[in-house]
Length: 383
Image (cartoon, rainbow, N blue to C red; front, side, top):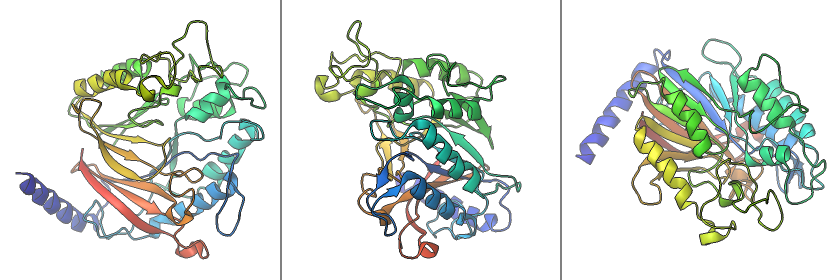
């Protein structure tokens, strides 16, 4: 039976690729990257031994600008063998700024550099000939900059990226300012229906607080509508991101909880309780997935390398296709090998509801950026 399904999938994709060469009106192209980490330097990038986040991210954006004319690999995925074509969305998965631990510059400076690169240097167009839409979510560093941290930062807090992301994505009638920003109230949670597919974007991780918002959002969505989730943390999250379970203790160097998620950590009094596991925290998320079987894919950054895998939960009760993306500045592998720098290109056929995610290696020839783009791994799933 499994072999039969694979043969059917291959036939559908091969037939679809032929049709797409004539008409691509049902194709959506999305670039996904995360963890820009403006404010720090790379030790090795195109001959520079201290390349700033501004330098590296700008170079990556310029490579993205070349994508429409780059031919996709013949991997039997969506649009296989054809030119990539227009890019409809660029999704950035958080950690725009690095945490401002001294001597890292302020988050406000990093946010200005981010805008320069991701808004002004980006020249991509969508299938309608309009500027590619930028979609953002915050990461743990962006949140810590806004809330404070247990190691010294200068300034002590700076919510500039959080305010900027909120204003760009939530479109408030009265734009937020740093003076009136309130994290408990001003969450970056939103959704978009694109080509019959429901995309959800949430703050950091689907904890109990975020799931309340998601429940209301999904109440308006048919169970026949596939749902794709973008957030910062991996499906397991991290113990330190939860709220401090110790009474009258906020963010401090003893407990080391960062209080980024509203949910209180249940495993014990320290982030090392039960080896820092999040088994109890994940259970609520696993139950939510079981209740909403139309959640078909999960995209994240935070722990940065390219990986296509399946999240099963602590007790192996779910199977959720999951896509981890690299970072231009803090990649687990690309951090020491610049030729492995990558982002992901997501191609969706809205008619067949198949999605192909491809690893785009964008710096394979550091001495000749014009010849740097190559394709790595790919995976196709049914939505």
